[in-house]
Length: 71
Image 1 (tube, helix red, strand yellow):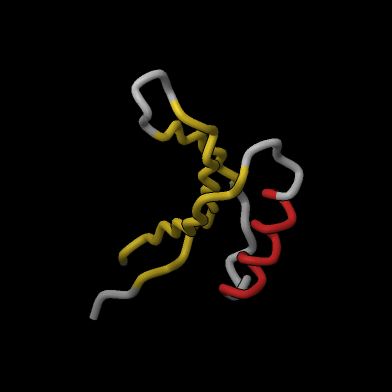
Image 2 (cartoon, helix red, strand yellow; image 1 turned 90 degrees about the vertical axis):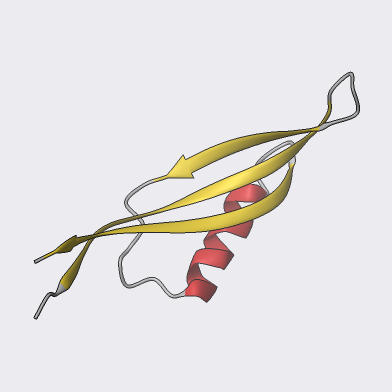
């Protein structure tokens, strides 16, 4: 039977950086690595909101990306 072992976790914050000359929304992203593998969704959200508050742009979305090794 195959098993998945969580190797790495990171979060990607996407910010709304305004509009371009054609009226399309400009998005900017920032990825943070080495997120605790045991962090809950609420903990990740709290960290993302705290980090997003440090930006000049408004936080648009937060994604968590986990990578696992299948053995």
